[in-house]
Length: 133
Image (cartoon, rainbow, N blue to C red; front, side, top):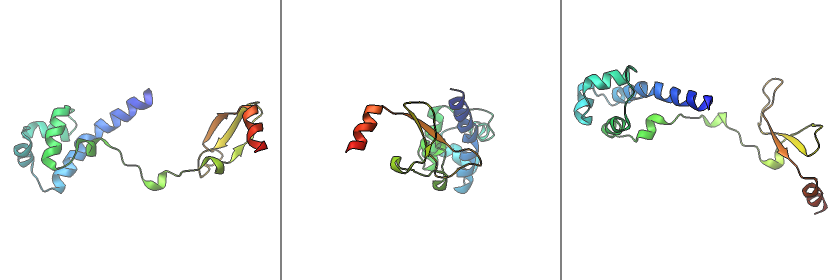
């Protein structure tokens, strides 16, 4: 829950910056964006400087005026190199002493002495059945 709140706060705190960047990339002044969106220049300035948080209606008007979807301003980009898929059959098993519990590495790389892991509950009967095939 705290992580979700952080993510929401982080996204909201970057809205103004993203709007300003898009406006300046398009070569629009505050007044021009105001005219295109129907939102006052003062309100846009406050949004860009994080003085106020825009409503969804305001975001829709500004997004439309900038030729973007609202999601463009809300989505956080994840670099492709940050995400590595490791198929279940390729995961590195990690020693565990708990019966019926198996740890498997889910990250392609180790982080120092740490590795991201996932715990899987393993039914002994299912294991035996799989081995006998």
